[in-house]
Structure formats: C-alpha cells, structure tokens
Length: 317
Image (cartoon, rainbow, N blue to C red; front, side, top):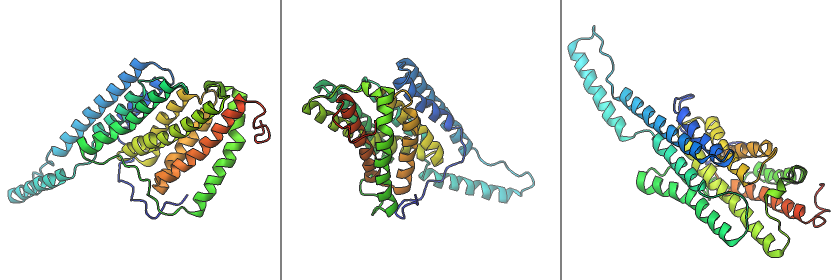
C-alpha cells in the first residue's frame, strides 16, 4: 500500500537503541496479564521496564550534558570560543527535547494496568458490559488525558479525518477483508471450538448485545493498540520495531478475550497489518472500518456456531 500523500514524515530515530529493552519489558507485561494470567509478573515487568527506561534516560542525559573533549593542541582562545559555542548549542537544543521514553512507556503501562483490573472473558450481562466500558474506556482516556494535560506533548491523537480520500487499493482491501474473513473465520472458530469462549446467543436480545459488544471492542482495539501503544512506541523506534512491540500487546489481549487455540496465527498478522495500514494511511477511520468489517464476519460466525442451521447457506463450515 503506497503511503498517503497527506501522511506526515516519519520521526528520525536510531535503528537500534537500548530503549528497546525497557519497551520490551513493558510490552511483555501484556502476555503476563492476559495469557499466563499472573498479575504479579505483569507488575514486575512494568516496574522493571520503567526503572530501566529511567536509568537509560539519566545515562543519555549525562552523556548529552558532558562537554566535548578538549584538543590539547588547540590554542586557548579557540578552545574558549568552542566551549562557549557548545554551551549555547546545548542550551538551544534543550528547548526542544526529544520525546521521553519514560513518559511514553508509563502511559502504555497505565493503560495495561487499567485493563488488567477486569477479567476479559466475553460476557453479555449488564454488569459485564459496564465493567468493560469503564476499564477499556479508562485505558484509552487516562493515557490521553495525562499526555495532553499533564505532559502537554499531545503524543496521542485520534485522526478520524486523517488520510484524505481513500484510494482504489484501499477500497479493494476492504473487499478482500470480507472475503478472507468469510473463508478463514468459520473454519477457525468452529473446528477449533473457540466459539465456546463466547456466550451462547440464542435470543434476539443476546444477538443484539453480541453485535454491539464485538463492534465496540473492535473500535477500542484501534484506539488503544494503534493510536496509543503504536503511536507512543513509534516516537522512539523504527516502525517495524514499534509495530512488533504493539502486536505483542494486541495479540495478548485478544488471547484472553477468546482468540485461543491456533488463533495467534490469525491475530498476529492482523495486528501487524493494522499497524502497517495506519502508518501508510494515517487514517483512524480506515483502520476502524477494516476492523469492523472483519468483526462483522466474526459476529455472524459466532451466531452461526451457537445456532446450527441459521446460516448454513452462508458459510462453508
């Protein structure tokens, strides 16, 4: 997919940095919370990641503040002028500091902690819906509020109107998503039995609740994993590294939600593709549309699996 002409230039970051270590620790807290479900391990990984990031930041600050080595052969006058110039450069550079890895990782950590407060088993009763709304909503709202009004760096944005008009390729991909979902998802859900991770929906009310729940969680996925986690990581690492890191968080959440068995063979490529599409289009509307089309097929498959005979003519399984 070609980059959209309205897309802003990618930030200039080092190909490799020690910052990857704390970022990996923070992102690995997601499988600790949502896959193996050991909360204390997730807390330990988050604390270790933030501590290492803080140590790395202090080391980098010390290196930046250290004056350059003096040339013994340089005349005293030139040496003094270079020292003054270096101080002025440092002062000027201090006006525009690079993004803080500690701050950005702390925002991701805050979101993960909020989501980890609730069980992610799919349920459709009123209390479960309220629990999901508060936790998932808070996981997006709290990092956004801290970034905007505490850190004042506007690191998290939701570009609903970004990207301009959709290209022919983008429209074609929407059709491809429906076709791929129709071919793959019934086989995955039914033959693996993972549809049983979702509650039985055998009444119009439950079917309606499932439809709303699947769509709402799909939208939230893009707000948190792409517009929050990926956007924050992208400020410090090359895109491919940031995308791999956010996919760890994305796939871990989907695992506890119910996409188990061999589900990661589907969710890992999906998470990576969504990050790639957002990077190219800079359009939250588009990635949400892709996700909702995919989730529409998920919804139909779940209804079909729990109600044999209802959609027999629609799916191959």
